[in-house]
Image (cartoon, rainbow, N blue to C red; front, side):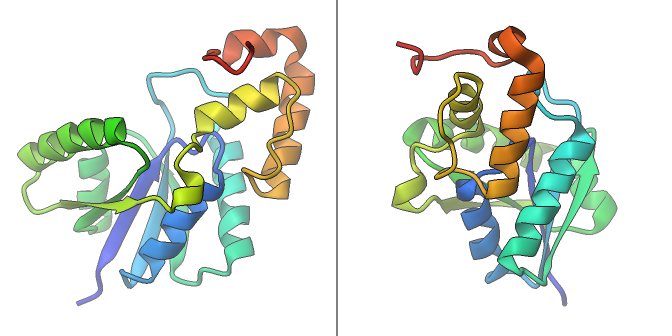
Length: 178
């Protein structure tokens, strides 16, 4: 039996932490479907089509032959059922991620009992890395090139040049501005 796992997220943008989880998951399951969510409850910098294209390019660069990319909307577990996946792959960076992912896994299991969540602990060098951090650094003109593939870094520069001063309104700031 071929095991299909779904690795869902907004990937706004994809970064090296995401890519590491995808690479590691690709060694555990016969097929990985990176599912780019189209309508999260947060402001996005990139459209679903742009995010899908960036993820596809990242997968191509990693040469992961058992990884495909698609967009989706609605409940992740319903998407998994639709594509025949039995596993949801999630990345964990810090303890607060565990609490959030634990509650989400329980809710998903309540909705559809035969879909399991498999968390993968991030590699140590990626524990600080999040799309929010990458977006904030890029929006402030910082160099995020050590955090994202070159094509994503260029897309971030272009987008924030287009947004100009409005970039700070699109990206919620945490503490990197201080």
